[in-house]
Image 1 (cartoon, rainbow, N blue to C red):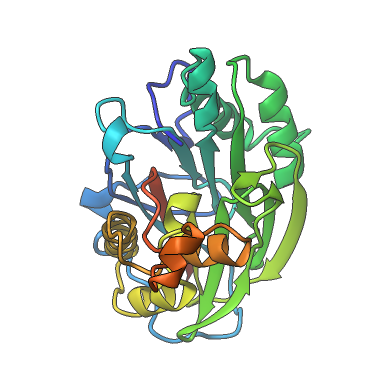
Image 2: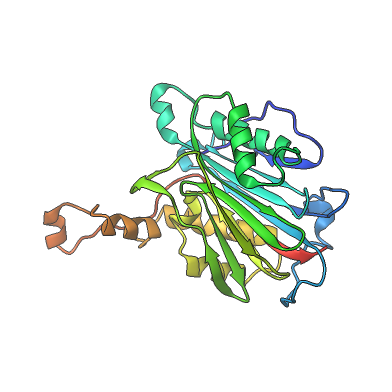
Length: 301
């Protein structure tokens, strides 16, 4: 799902990433929003080692990494995402629907423009810091032909995370080395997710929690227990995002790996021909795709 070149203007209080395999850090600072890149954030971007009850305002420290589909490296893939330091922090991922290419439409243009519009509208009064309204207004403002699955998460300074999602982009919350929250994919049927019309979920976060957001390129190839295990190995959000993206990429190219995607396919009745089953063969392998990973550490402001 992909990532092309941005034409819309972006305010300096938001940041939109549209580069290939890019890693960065952003520390969200309340009051006056400031962006801190990877060069200047290293001293302040590590997550606390201990979870404490909320005694102060919180925000996100964010690391990102994107790896395009092996066949789409030249144009960067079809995923798009943005990170904003507005309020407690806003993160979003959109995954362009590849089927549009059959109609000579670039599938990356729609998610790219959608994310650019959402980035510009984060502080809009009518949005009222509501991810569902943000998605609707960004969608209305998007003129590119196409469609996308998408997820937006907006953190309040009091620790409430509001999530709007459509389709199979996902989000996990990890606390003290355990998975405590997971979004569920919304599908018409297997491998055919809903595209743009959202529902909203809220979850209370505490200092020391970590969120992992991504396109289906992550969750189709990496199990939740692998996500938790990887996150616990890194104190740096950017390094954690890179490690997860690389793990997903390696799994996606492994034809013998029992991936979440192949397991789900078999449970839905998709498998090798019967004569192969008789020989003991079963459907295995990862799913090559664009892979976008956003890791957000909840830190005290």
